[in-house]
Image (cartoon, rainbow, N blue to C red; front, side):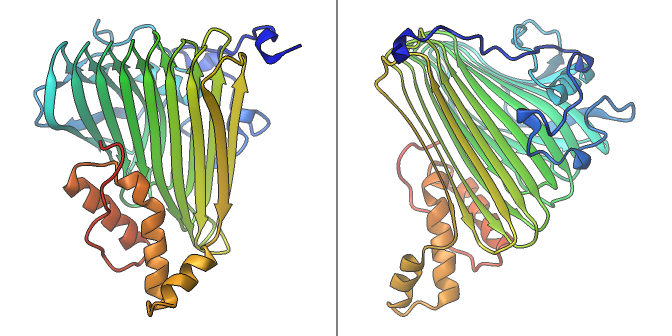
Length: 382
């Protein structure tokens, strides 16, 4: 039996619900919780009476706080795991970034989140209308525990860019679902920067509501000490003539840091003429950390333009170090240059020079590196 003739399978999540009790208690025996240190997120798997909503600040007129039943929110989206349902069921208000049809927003819409209690729940929705263009930067508060959902709606022919930045002291736990709906001929760009937090679990996903959509999902993460980070992605190709590109890079330094990257791409039977590629690269800066990388690609049709995936985990490239040292560069500086170069192609996608310098500076600070001027521009700019 050829690939194109394979019988269709039901890949819908086993449960979609606003009620956390409809989900089984997470267990490391289940694939989606296989790596997660469940003992470190205890207390966040069910609602907490002392928790609160999330605080926020923004100077943009496109940002407001609305009731969770506001008709502008995507009422057909429901969480697909227990923590997403805990957050969705606990919130009464949502942060709405609403850009109407035929609007081009100059500059970035910046939203700063602020935890209002030891545990906060959040629901953020980005709605960009047809033929509109907007860039949204969300700065998370990692000083406390936050459980939340981020939903992005990219209308037909729109251009939507969303940056999620988790940076700060490695004290809080961050559990998020990030779902993007890509409309007809729309372009979606998501960039996840994760530098802080004791435990970070980000679950980005993409679905296409019509043909011709394009989705780019990039990530840069850094873990040291005893930090745990999990980035679990899912791209659901169910429409023809769409594209997806996923590239995540992570660095691990010292201690017992542990990172997990799982990239699932499903190309359904009806998704002919699509093109998809996913890649994860991890750089080990010491002997203690552990990086797990699991790329998965499933094709139900052979009628595709291209499909592939790649994953690598390794230490410094000795040849790169030798080349730099042979030109008189001290070993410590050479190692810093290698780390900067490792992240350059992801961070260069940030066209906001101030934000780009800030993020690179934080990476250098966390690694005890000397500061650098900037990362060279290139490629797809945010």
